[in-house]
Length: 118
Image 1: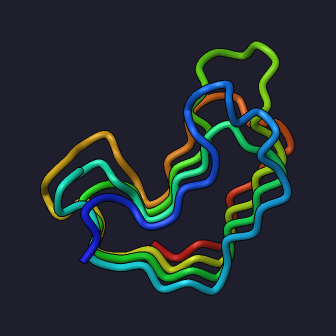
Image 2 (image 1 turned 30 degrees about the vertical axis):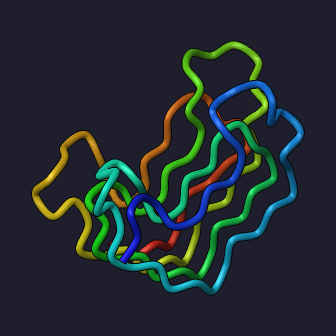
């Protein structure tokens, strides 16, 4: 029973430009967004070399995994993000729109999203 999201990597401001080489793996995250409905299972902002793998994320009112949160195609600190082999289910639950199992925002060079089950 989470009031917002489950795991957060970095922040949406320039204070965290050096967040890198983070692994988020083998977690079970469920039942979130009870206070802040836009909380997601894993949120990664302004970080690089992030691996999000082998997690089960369910029953959140917004996206399962969300990365980036930069706009445009100018140089970015967000790159080399790997999102793979996650099991994402029972998301959104009719509360919010503009969401997805995996939601990426902004240019994220050398990143990949693969083999996730949604």
